[in-house]
Figure (cartoon, rainbow, N blue to C red):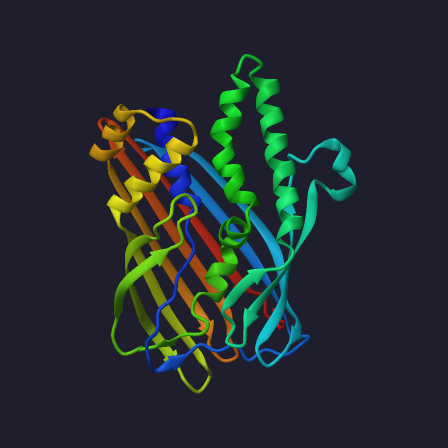
Length: 317
């Protein structure tokens, strides 16, 4: 079951975007103007454990620019641009590469409060994701010529469908932007913890996934329009098991033994997110997210931890 366990832990490491809830006291509202521009450094670190042994560590850092390219009474149009490594792109697309990197530009809209609405150029990004997936499959074929290609393609199709869909691009490919916009459009009570049920978009099945969430504020500077808060979420384990079974079915792996195996297993999926945020004018200063996914079944234990850090680059630095 090692391969299947790895799929489960990986899947929960990349899935789900935020829903939002309302409260009172401090309002997070975007006061942006056309031409506003902010530079960020984004760092991602992912660690994988098999049992108690650290098996793998991956990390990457890139610079991104957030700029307002249009503003109306009802919405903003934003450009999020960064350089990302696409080492799996085929050689014939080498004109897109610069030192094994390609600049990606996402154009998306928010409402007048800064709440994320949709990516406009998602079809262009979808085509690039398809190239990357196809290149990865070709690499597997070369490394393992005896592999069952039909079975491989069927197993990869659910992931390809997710990553190339509009919803998948908005919540997974642009994962850091979900954190960037998370509090915007909401008023929060800052004097005591806010406890509520979080709902996550389900990109595999129909029903949203539930989680127990707590938002708590550590610091509030009303004069400076700045605050520090934490957002912690524990995913409902039964919902987690349900989506894993659906995922395997879509991969062409349907077996009662697998369902029984998953039913008897233990899932712990915990998010710990830390925000330093200028709620006026609606710009994050520093965000650090930490998602830990632990899957335990029989004698097997697999765990991943993924951290994302988003830090504003100030002009005086």
